[in-house]
Amino acid sequence: MEEYETEEFQKVMLSELTERIEELNSGLLTLEKDPKKNVAYDDVLRTLHGLKGLFSLSGYPKISSLTHSMENLLTSMDDTRLEQAVTLLFQYSDELGRLANSLKGGKTPQLLRFDQLTQQLASFDEFMVNLGNKLRVKVQFNPDCKVVSARSLVLLKKLKKLATIERTIPPVDEIEAGITFRELYIELTTQEEDEAITRIIEESQDVVSANMSRLLDSVSTLEKTGVMEGTQESLNVRVNLHDLDNIIQLLGDLVVSGQFIREIGEQQAYTRSFKENLANYERTIANIQDLVIRMRLVPLETILTRFPRMVRDLGQKEGKKVDLIITGKHIGIDRSIIEKLTNPLTHLLRNAVSHGIELPEKRLKKKKNERGLIRLDITHERSDIIIEIKDDGGGLDYKKIRKKAEKLGFVSRKSSVSNDDLQAMLFSQHLSTAEQTTEISGRGVGLNIVKQLIEECSGNIEFDSKPGEYTLVRLIIPISVAITKVLMLQVKKHRFAIPMANIEQILSVPNHMILSDSDTTNKSIIVDNEPVPLIDLRKYMRFESSQENISYQREKSTNNKIIQKENVVLWRKGTRNLGFLVNELLGERDVVIKPINDFLSRVGTFSGATVMEGGQVVLIIDPMNFLEAKIHA
Image (cartoon, rainbow, N blue to C red; front, top):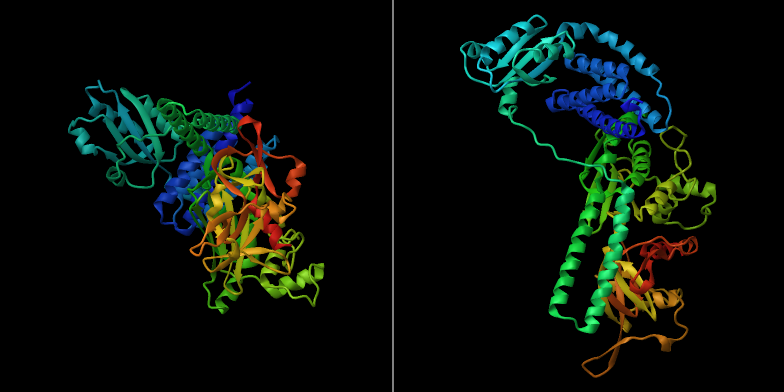
């Protein structure tokens, strides 16, 4: 079996192919917007060169040859035909995507479309023949060679039979003068294959290496940027995500054991030396914990690179001019979450193009720029990643949404429904306001699928819109779901935990400051002049049957009256907040959240569980589910 036929090799090849396709699309989009940008040329040519080598090594000689032709095509195009070349390269990129999907599904790749691309290249042959193949070659000679100048002149003479020598460093007159040097840079134009040029150089006397690259910038420019300096590469290894998950589980066990040892030490009054060593142990575990979590983080850029090309293509299909600006793509998120975000982001961006951005003529009538703008902004807030998708289109048409909701029976014609309620209905299944079904949108799914996928990531989704101006969708996603810091709570005699990430503050509130609604029995408090709904966990969990069972904090006021106080844990996620009434606060803990059985997950109150020292199971409260239940009650 050939090396490239092994399953492991195919996995590596597919991974690199996927990365190269994303690089190619990104470079072509930049080149299409700014043809004068030399960096974009370099990026595209570098990607094509890498693809050519990948296909050659992987047993696809036809595609490797086609890729080589694509390289020549791009290097030979002048400004008048560059747009056609970029369009053809986009088609080539699409075929690479189909090839990757075939390999991923274990199917035999179909090469017919690659043959069609080869035929389309024929229309560019005249330009390619006239302009040739521009190359830059770095030649290194043996350090012991005493006649480098003579060897260089002989080499240049041989190359002139196959190429036109444009420039050398050192210049030819200095070489003829016999100066001392060990590296020769040659800029040339040729109609020959790269291999023919390389063969002549490598067969020359005292040549130890030859490095070749496509030429776009002049050699003199490269001198200024440090072409003669070496480059450093960081070393990377591939780590199985399952192994990282196991390490996280083991670390969780170590954390629990350390906390158990500390409690015993405090009870037994162990020596100072014991406590110092325990503190060192806990610091080491915390450092390993941070390192492993960082290892699990992947830059969001890995899934965002495909979207500029997608938005461009969708805009063209609908006759719209759309720009996509992405910020914060360097921010990392857990490996187990990142792939789950691809579909929600794809759906939201397609909605922004189809439902949000207007046609150019309509935008001009509204005195807007004919080019619509979609922003995808990513920020880091506490332990969450905030992803905002905002378009400067027409905003939500609440009349149209209400009309569709009435048609589907979600509301009656006489009922009073706020704009917020109508926004919430967009997350209901089958509510779509598209006037006609297209491949882009309007298939009756609405935003329901997006909400479900975000909840699978333990995230939250918020919506905002101003008619005629914009639509904003905000996704709030936890950075990591591995080891989580929680606040331990005592509710009557039972222990629970709540994630620390979104706890805003902890208050001791006098009883008279807790407001009650006589009609609904709902409770709230005023914080920073805003009402915050309260959940009394003792009543919610049905742990109390009478007022006598409630244990309050008691303080004496200045006039010796007893003031009863309640512990309130204030929680906030995005723009939404909630308070929890509890008996006692037991401090913070680092825990590994484990899944719970189907019955408890259907209850909706808990997101998971953790195991404490001695085997005690503590349920993790999910505040978001409380908030959703309270809103929809």
